[in-house]
Amino acid sequence: MPYFDEARQKWRAQVRVGYRKHTRLFARKKDAAEWEVQARKELEKQERMNSLLTLSDFVIQYLEHAKQRFVDKTFKEKFALAENFLRWTGNLPVEEVFPQVIHEYLIHQAKTRSANAANKDRKNLLAMWSWGGKILDIPLNPVTKIEKLPHDRQPQYTPSPEDLAKVLAVATREEGVFLSCYLQTAARRGEVLRWKWDEDIEFNKEEVRLGTRKTRDGSMEYEWLPMTDQLLGQLWYWYWNRPVKDSPYVFCWDQKGRFAEPGDQFTGRRRFMDSLCTRAGVKPFGFHAIRRYVASMLADTHQISSKTVQRILRHKNLQTTERYLYNVNRDLRGVLGLLNGDGLTKSPTAEPHTGNKETGDSYNRQ
Image 1 (cartoon, rainbow, N blue to C red):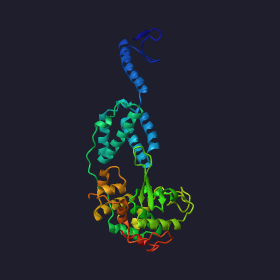
Image 2 (cartoon, helix red, strand yellow; image 1 turned 90 degrees about the vertical axis):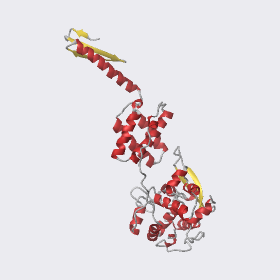
Image 3 (cartoon, helix red, strand yellow; image 1 turned 90 degrees about the horizontal axis):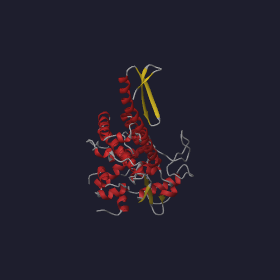
Image 4 (cartoon, rainbow, N blue to C red; image 1 turned 60 degrees about the vertical axis):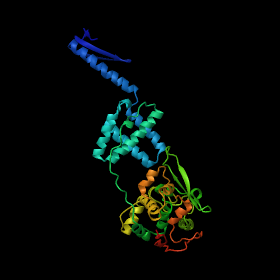
């Protein structure tokens, strides 16, 4: 309660929270009493917040986990979500992040960005709170009460056989070998870039190994696939003619770059497809579009079942595959053999059986 301070001739209000004591002088006893009530509420709230897990601490711990667990692209997506969400909510205690707070954030993202972007944020928030429940014992996941926002899925561009043929026609021999690795395996971009001669290429067994981190725990998962005759011929050619003989990587830098030495692994080749498409005079498309092209060709042209295409694309969920195509099962080597052209030989020599070395015409048979 307030008391009259004889020395100051004023009423002194005092509030003790924990080990800390707070005081203030007032001319009137009534004002001092009202301040005590309000100050006690604020200080108790602050004390309680200091003892609770805050949203910023939660986010930092989750991002440390995500940095170790996920590929760089996924981590950057989660990092961007964390920045946007913290900017929107402020540093609340985690237990005060109610479903309404998240719902309002997602609606704002849908208005300022898109419904699809909001749904991606919802997915990452759901994963973050799920991790928090397992590791930090956060009792409730508020994101589970929020449904996805409706949105129209934009059709992804898949090149026509004619456009792909134009790209292959302008490709150099090295570019043709590199493209063939995607056309003959339907691989993701990083899967081919990670190839090592001793670990991922089995010439005797005529198999290649593809690895991805698209797993629940972010660990690498590998699968061996049979080579087509054309891919075997291409890789034999490249093995004997690769410019950097002592590099373990199948595709690597052949000269010093700004951030790389000869023999270092390619990590992206972001301008590779743009350059080829520009030279060919076709609508730009990327490595993932080649993956969709292979899936569509197998399903539409060769009438391969979606279940078999799923095995080739290595999707965990058939619905993911069906987004690539809309069309039993056969031997996998026979199915992949449909991707062959009319004929690179299997001979392990420096030159393939047919085709023009400079233009890569031998690849122009899809």
